[in-house]
Length: 312
Ligand SMILES: *Cc1c(COP(=O)(O)O)cnc(C)c1O
Image (cartoon, rainbow, N blue to C red; front, side):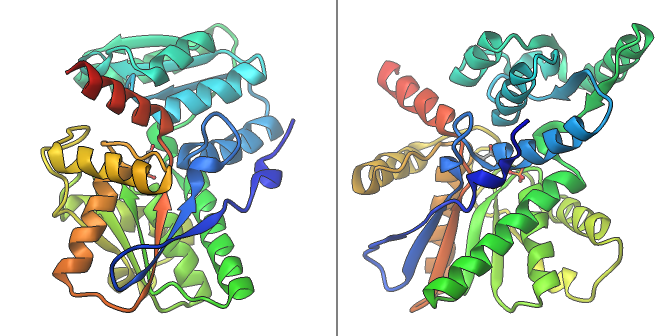
């Protein structure tokens, strides 16, 4: 079965931005599998693990909007492996991602959000009792394998810097479960690099949001490190009205970035983070720097966003 190796590195493109900084974007959305994104990069590593082991089905969780669930459903279907998805019924409306999950034959169970965790345990036990060998993937691809995917991404960024004679003073991206964030900071610590890696929270608040990132970093490194505290910057000023909630400003970013560069952003993750980055740069008066924004994917959500706007 194919590993993701031939899919990398993803392109880094310079945006001719009007402001004083030099802004680049790393197109993780262009990983050529199932609309790409950080869930594809993580998923490819999870399935390397699955392919090496003795498993015959996959269990994971996420809402009907989940990029993670769409990618995992795709990779499972490709292998003819049943894929069981547990989701909160509070967020179970029809989306492009959910339609793809259906098309891929995922077995979706929706339950009230507070019973999701128990339903997962029950599903895993039920499958085992049937003699099946389930592989469990935490929501969003959280865990050391997901972290590894973004250590790999960090090393790709280093390679780009070496061959293009550029150094990114800042790296910005949307921080959700914190796995992408943890991987990038682990990459920085392992390379002993000095730069600012700034996760723009799309939902979680401090101190909890940042603690989750730090826990993932420690778990991956298998040790504490004196640089973890300073290197983990989790900004919760730009979460707007909360997870998945758009507003006029965010929708304007989607329109502007698509118009100016032909790049799709979405209101839950990438547009919210892009707007947060812009505001952070203004607030901290950052000038004459090389800045990298990581486009973490979510293209199906871009289509949900523009259709919803059209219909409203
Ligand atoms: C899941 C997701 C994120 C957040 O990544 P985490 O590793 O969970 O922090 C960002 N952008 C997109 C498009 C996503 O699907």
